[in-house]
Amino acid sequence: MFIFDSMKFADTLEESGMELAQAKTLSKAMQTIVMDSGHHLATQHDLTEIRSEIVSFRAECSTAIHAVNVEVQSINSHMKMIKWAMGLMIGIGMALVFEYIFSH
Picture: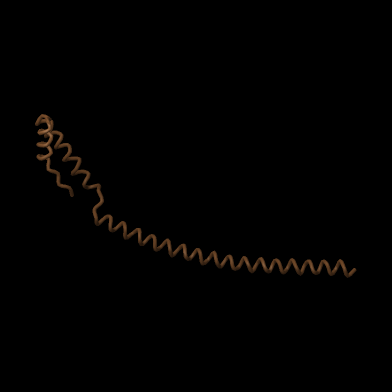
């Protein structure tokens, strides 16, 4: 919570040449603004809590990203096996076609 010295603020305004009634009115308005805004500002505890949540979220994201990377590596490994198998099947198919063509 903020502490706002409305009398000191009014005195400062009056010393700078503002009429006392205007200075007091402005001081009361500023006090209302400052006191009301105090309810909407984050405290050190709020910031610490948010930082903790961010750290936790980053750890969860890191774990999820690692799991996805492992899965992608597994898929890449399977894709390489499929490529080799397809190449082998094409090679055997071509060998059979050549054998048929050249044997007749």
